[in-house]
Length: 280
Image 1 (cartoon, rainbow, N blue to C red):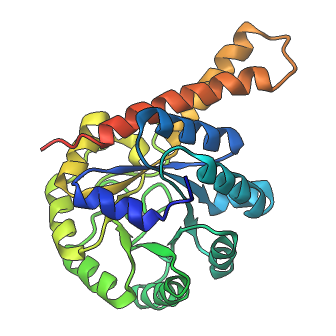
Image 2 (image 1 turned 90 degrees about the horizontal axis):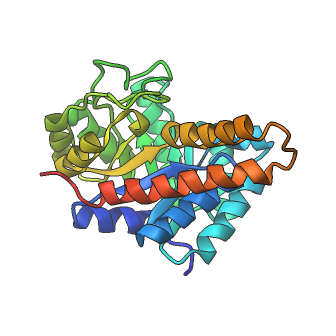
């Protein structure tokens, strides 16, 4: 199956009032696990590579090309997305490699500067058939607006989408990045108001901190793209730790990375099932 557009995946989910999982890739085992989990579920999925992960690997190209190859070989629709890029050069590199979407994060800038920078990225990407996600206000866990109590204003969201022509909007509704517990309290009424005001697919960042029932209710209220990273990393690390605790003499990393990959794949399958059955 050829590489799929993130826009096509997101708009199909929005049309059917379901959600789509967007899972972060840290190393190739993550990408393999996510694709395997999606194939087991028989559902589309988005592979995300963050600016921080590109920095970890020394550049975007190695992990990006590996993820693109896995996406192209998958038996279900898979897209590859650049997550939380703060650099226009990194966006340009991702587009050149063949990513089908980017999330440009200028949220630390004053509103007018955010609009101008995001609009420039949108114009560049739309000229190359690449879907653009952006953020209005910072996401919590990064000194920003997804901290407890922070919320995106629907009218400001409407104005931002109109001024930037972005294809999707990450909004602040009560979740926070890098949460280790799944007890975030979301504002579901606000999600519905934002859905109506923005007119584009909404993105929930910090979804690792949201439990299954909260994720289902968020989709039912109008959320479309659900980003999950820390939750899967916890499972990956736990599986590695469990194996090494029982096999202290092991030297071959394949012996403990394999079980970790399997654990993530199983959870991706389960989470995609949660997102495909929104609560009403």
